[in-house]
Image 1: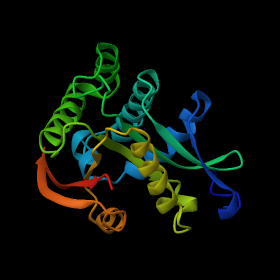
Image 2: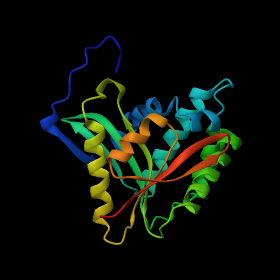
Image 3: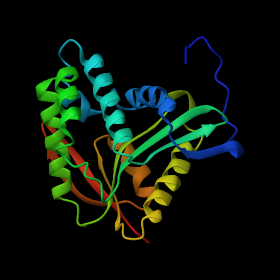
Image 4: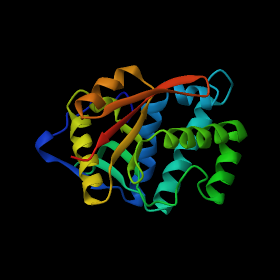
Length: 214
């Protein structure tokens, strides 16, 4: 949304959590790009100090969302009528969508994000999965609220929707998430996510958290 446009506050009574459709992916990618632009992990993986960081990050998020769509992984959006305000992407317990991804995803990532960025993303996911204390679980890969609509409570509505997705799978033991922004820790703690351990990936130390099924 251009900065010159007036931001219309969301109608909180009208917010609906809906699975994303193909036509929503472009706006979803924009929301997530803004959410993760200053995330230390992504700044490290996609080499913030080198020219082209924004392009590499945009490309990586776009390819991730395309891979989620093709693999039919749950992507949730919060909508106020037709306005997409927030996004969350999960990997399901039974997804053949682990660290290796599929070959065409890796090829596209190599072409757009570069070898270093692609390898770092794959290595990060592998390391995180090795430290989750469960066999069948969901993994929260992305979560973001459009910057114009933050501080309205949309994050907590999205958290409830994420929990509902997990509970739809009777065998899922919970939801894992790797948090690299300290300001987000309290948000997940409020959502009943428990701290597991500090985990270093690349040059960044984040916190692995897990919400057990209730």
